[in-house]
Image 1: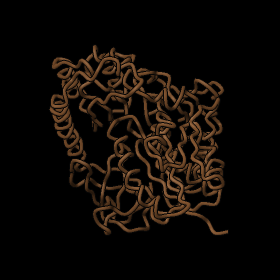
Image 2 (image 1 turned 120 degrees about the horizontal axis):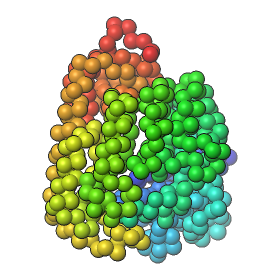
Image 3 (image 1 turned 90 degrees about the horizontal axis):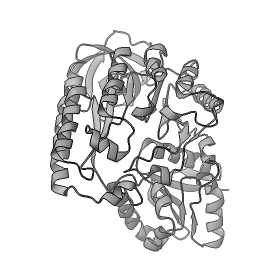
Image 4 (image 1 turned 180 degrees about the vertical axis):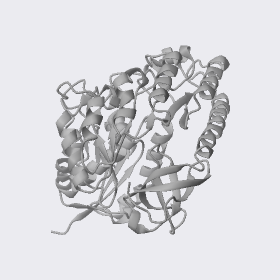
Length: 446
């Protein structure tokens, strides 16, 4: 029987990317083959994000562009999943009447069954009910053929209820995967040639609240660190209030844990942090950063900042700028506040004007560019261990990879070193990457 084609487009974070990998693996088992040409697809899935308004707008624009293809291709099934699907449910069908399927964040495992039902009945389906347990957490996604890095979801959901965030309502409460199940998946990935694993969760620091047999996140890092073949361990995202001393010491005691942490601060004002329900003060955050740098002086710290939260004054904003100048992050993902329906912050109203938000965001981004370039320039002359990911986008003669601190480096090399760890001397620094040259005449693995 000839396989049908599936095309999947992903919006949003790394967790969505990994969910898409799981969807592809699941549908391959149901007789579909992944394709890169949307016009050849028999099944198109848009995996959505609703954390920010811009992501939602992109989804609606893409669906609008697919209207004509849906008319032209008989039997084409168009599906929407992810957080926006969970949020809108049947309203999605009302807004986009040519949609065939809307499935929520707890319903990925049901996709083969749902698609088969639509093929037989030609009737649109909406499936967004929360399940007692998120069964998709256990779907193996071995779609990383030829890659050296792979994601592992260790938990889903969140219990924090930050006032601006819809995640607890759309992903549900925290559910940790069983400890040894995660370890076994990491072993399988290593057996299949994966050198680097990236552990994913809305708040990995609180891993272990269920299903872990008493093991915490630091225990998981230490156990995966024992697996032969795994050279690097990364993770995201960490909530500052749950950053334990045991986890901090993993950066010095567990060799395979890379010297990088993404630790979202969101704001530098205690008043705004309280309104956000973040659960820490800026002094608490400074203390966490000091502890990290004390244990691991080379650590790269990145963060998130929201600009223009309801009620943010010039004084509050200046506190954020002052915080950035004190910490000097390696990089920051910064965004204008966008109101999300159903959150506590939505009741406050969007009180900061678009013009003020834009001006403040420009200041944050300009300052961070200075700090990022400063950090990169400080690496010039250093010899860095680079895990080679593949050919550079900029030149077919260059290889590209990342330092242990998660910085991109391009350098002259050949295809034989893809997947190997090589020593590269940094020669030039730019805003988004660095340039280097092999530190040894004969490139060897480390």
